[in-house]
Length: 150
Image (cartoon, rainbow, N blue to C red; front, side, top):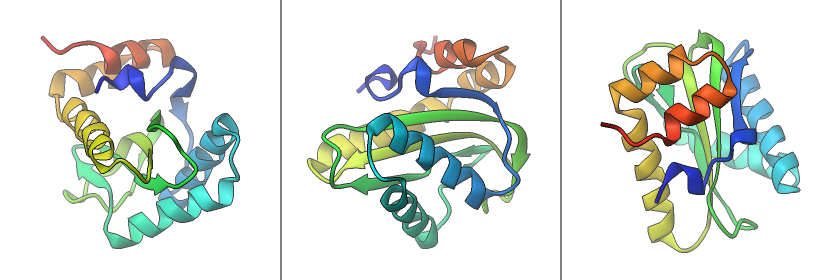
């Protein structure tokens, strides 16, 4: 699965302001709900429940909050680069400045794992994250995330 299959340029956000993790996740789920034409509350609840199981902050300033949503037919992503890094209770204790919100359908499970693995693999690439952090605008962030690493 390619990142471009789940992320559009319109859902790539640059210099998002957030004072804390909860507010950021509420803002991102509200934006996602608007795009998907869904009620924001169930999306926010699903993301919050997943975070209660353990932080989705994977280290090195990256987080991939994700949840399964029954009303989705295919994975949906939203990428945000934050203006200032925030505490996300990441596994390495470092603040997070790159957040990829991933909403997945409840079935099939293989597609969910493929989408999550694709995003995680891409964001573990130091060249990609450097390009994300160095991009001048949302278009540059989008180009950096969908580019094939070389």
